[in-house]
Length: 469
Ligand code: NAI
Image (tube, rainbow, N blue to C red):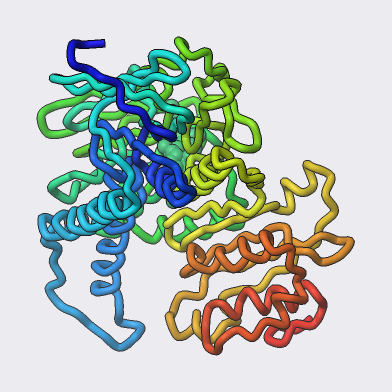
């Protein structure tokens, strides 16, 4: 303890103010706890600052540009469409600032103390919060670890001015003429597509046999079809071998089908996964158990093996999704307050903001089969929906997965416009234990994309109206 460092006592100490941590802090405060949240960078974490939110602003701007260029089918012709990318970046940053400012207001409004600095665990009741010039000790009754993740760095592709991680790719000040993307996962596809929409020639190098692992082939095929309509090349089963960097660009070597190839570009985006931020917290001093991959082991209430320390979000098992972190944050806060809350991941949706959007929740036909769960699948195409036709956006389908024995909804997959919004109705159905009949009997406003969900449910119960049985 440094001179003058008198410990501050708090009930619940949350480490990390991303969508996991700040939500946990607010819920703990609502439940009557004295809460301190520690954050070394800007409030809001990766999601708000350099992830979900800015990427969606960029993706949306790219769509605006594309629509301006290609609205002939609607009878609209726009000439001399140009992009002021500085303005695009300003728009993106404005959205980020509004939201991170909002988080600060919410924390303060809930009387959560914000401690700026880096947290280091001394023992299971003590944390030091350090900045370059100060150190403050906190004594806590319970702690919630919510420190998130950072991009994996491959030794042969060290991040630099031209070799970018997702943060670098989001913050470019110019639209690249050419870009190479290593990793056709969620980040690669979302950011690569955003730049492709601005006119960048994009080459994707994906090691696996398809992009967007975890989504069904019928869904990824639609994304590939759209991408191929742009200046995009997709190499699957492609191993990136190395990069030569110059002042003005990169030359990337890769191997595909036993042949070595090179591609030149202005920038290389490396998006090959994220690793948990659990290595510099002093957790070893507390004896918190971890997996080989550096993930913290938790029980169904997000509690670690150290009974007053909880962990949530990207540092625990499961998909690295902001809404999963927030959900776990609420569970941890409620568990600390002595409530019986427990995690149940079946209703957690996964969304890709690709073209078209993809969304999935619960079981797929394949995961149900793998677990020996007997299910039926009922499909309805966007092309048979009036709203989709009027949007001139009809590629896609909704597949509803129900239990064979009683029609209870246990999953859904959507590819198509607004899939990201439509999936929530299916999450609700799973959470509430609804049957396909419940959805089919729910009046959905006409004409909306939401009717596709109702129609798929009608297919499931054997009485579809807008497709022939
Ligand atoms: P990812 O795990 O989704 O994809 C990484 C891809 O890189 C995989 O397809 C993998 O096969 C490939 N890969 C790995 N090493 C490679 C190599 N040497 N050469 C070529 N390909 C290689 O990881 P990503 O895209 O970095 O995203 C990280 C996390 O962020 C994901 O878990 C995702 O859930 C989350 N995220 C979620 C978003 C959303 O909810 N919309 C948006 C962005 C990220």
